[in-house]
Image (cartoon, rainbow, N blue to C red; front, top):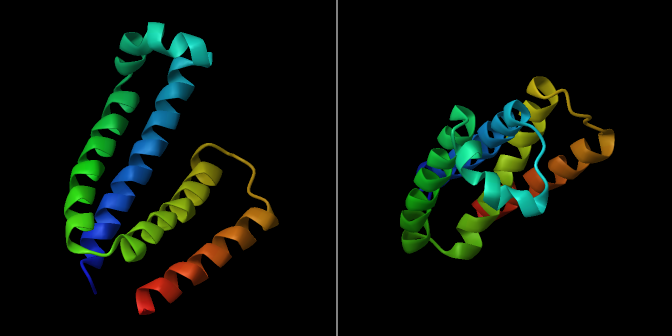
Length: 119
């Protein structure tokens, strides 16, 4: 299974980081691209944002192990599994629009990941 469990843990932590940061920014409010740097300290005081970044760092550290032990052409496409998680959670938790075209796109991604894991 080429360390599939480690790959999936790293990918899921990355997805969790994205979702937590999104939640944190909903709490904090919208920020213009040029103002992010001047507000960075205050943004990081939002617990969701801070925990989200901790998830990212942990994911990145695990990813170092993943790519040191696996072909990147095998491991990296597994990141697309996070698209499924993000799509589902964003629909249910953030009430974002999930169209049939997005669902079809995720389905195609899943087929691709299955093909890669079988190779």
